[in-house]
Length: 419
Image (cartoon, rainbow, N blue to C red; front, side):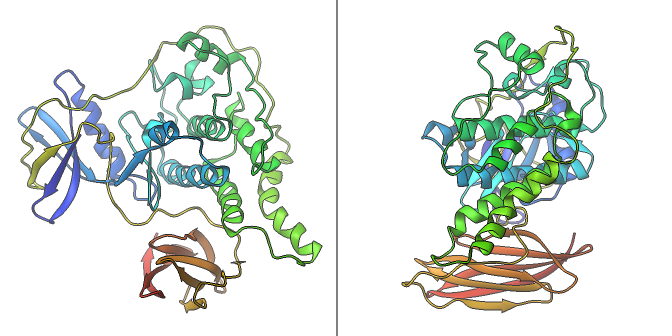
């Protein structure tokens, strides 16, 4: 991976260049797969080219660190785990809608930035329904049906995301296996250990995590369902508890906001903890996917006129700085009281709905948002952050309200676009 500058558009980018022993088809496929997707929680690909026989991909430069490195620094609080996994699930849902399965969801392929999570490295992505002669991926996150030679499906990505969520909440993997062989065997035959009870993790979220780890892919929720449920849990954690004296019926309804979606899955007639049986003990070899950074300078002339300006041995496998990442939709109308030290909230109105925001310590925070008639809330990032956003949707029409702070006063930019 190289940090570079696009001389045509005048922006910093990341350039991924293969080592001599790597498969050039892989980076070409990665470029095509990622370029077909557009979502704030997926790393963007800008260009592909070849310098002689050496292919390279030009992509956005993400300012952040991998979730794997973030975990080394210490445990992730439950609300942060909900938000990060909600954003990854939203990106996966977009990929699945496009008929693409990532196949290597893991902490090392999740970038944590100041604006949200981004899923990177579509190097081994495959069309949904494709078969596998040799299973590629990271053993600790490979779904059992893939180990057994089943078709590639979106449910396999949901399984891997369930492992990530479990690890963030529990600090360990769901199985006791310590070797690659033991881990692979556990995926197929061993039920995951129940997620330990802990403060800040509602029971419906624990049940959702376990449903993602179901042995039978038919028993796992879709990525969009996971994104919605975790986003609601994250929004509740960010907004905090309601003020003292709130009527009990309002408290009950607020608690149900998270439980209702998980309950819909749990009571749909499919048990999220049901294990499939009768799986054979042996399966195809599981190969860990990795790509080593280039150890020497490689000129990368091409249509983008990219000039390599510096090496970065610790640059993540994909990187970039793109529009603010957004979490999947919170409840249609959310509100919270501003702190005593903050300036009064300001309400901004658009064709898609309204957003109320305030500034505190130079950071924007949405204190409420509500969709207009015929619109729904598509995504929201309430902050506090440099930019707090909410997106409203009507059919394929999207309306974005992006709030920033200038001199302690909220300012909003309203954008309309097509999905």
